[in-house]
Image (tube, rainbow, N blue to C red; front, side):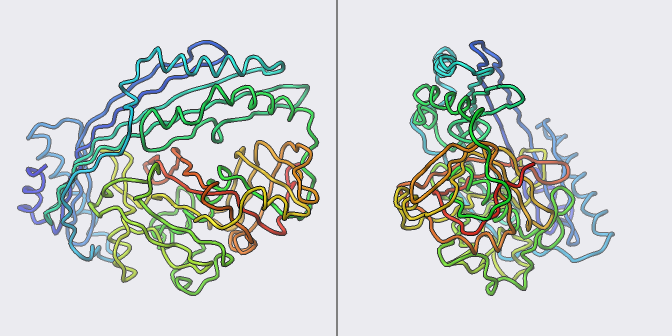
Length: 477
């Protein structure tokens, strides 16, 4: 690593950083009582990023010998020099980053140390429980493990060493009846709840103990009444659905590279332009959104980002007022601020870009049962099934796996094919109640796509059920 930094410095780079990354993953799946997948992979390589004449260059290789490191460093310098000829605003990184230290994700049981037979036994038991329910056509259960060892150094004197550990998994049951297909997942949509931590984090969800209930719900949905069509009502979202709502309508629009337009092609820009900072009413007074990389279990939790900036917490929306962005060193300097540690790369062969850390809705004061009792007429929805949002992150539509009618303060009939739609600031301004910390869960989103070439990031969203007034539901035809 020091070889690359020394060469970059000698060849005139204003700044350089190097990441040495080793990724290891394992995936185990069961389908309809049979082992479907046993997969493992490991990848190691080096990425060099340099700044020359105010422009970036990046190159990488899985070959770690000295000559190859010299070659990719020279290539990164050539790219930066070529990029500087294009013109445009010169990059400024603001205050120097000189972080030093080590970080390890806290865990009790290393998931890679758990015998394969034990992993399969858990998944097969959950599969068997789902199979006890008549009417289920397909059953799936799976577990996923990821370990990332990452070293970072830069020409400003930073050197960090961190090991991040993730564990996840879940179950899904599919019921088919006539022309109707219904899927129920647990603990999260698409049968995948993933967090930072060890094997104990998958065990805590008790997949076998919830399997029969989930399968029964899938069958019951086949004959459930459809979601009322094109009405406006009170909507209570469960935590896992709210997590994706936060991801799409709060996380992505607060990415400052989207605001500046340097990220646009993959999934659009943002309506949260900089003149709104500090004076835009994003939500109601009960809406408090935080970006942090320090909260336990979050997939956006680490020691330092991929610019060596220490993990931290900062508000995005405070009592409904829009107050902050997700930033890199470069974009923060453009805004007159300092980075809040949101630069990450999906691997050693990708340049870091602004990615969501843990973007969470802070808990409110309501107990869930009191919130239902306080709702005269509405619908409760949970577990995402589909989503769509425009390229400014403004107009959206979501579908959920399951819903329940709320009448006179009580949960009533089961509803299938539930959907709702809205406009981001109107929706969050309609939020009048958020459940308390007893109902707050850190949900994982391990499939956030962004960038060209595409990168997949792992993000976390803490949320408790919340109520939104006057929301249009039943928009699916």
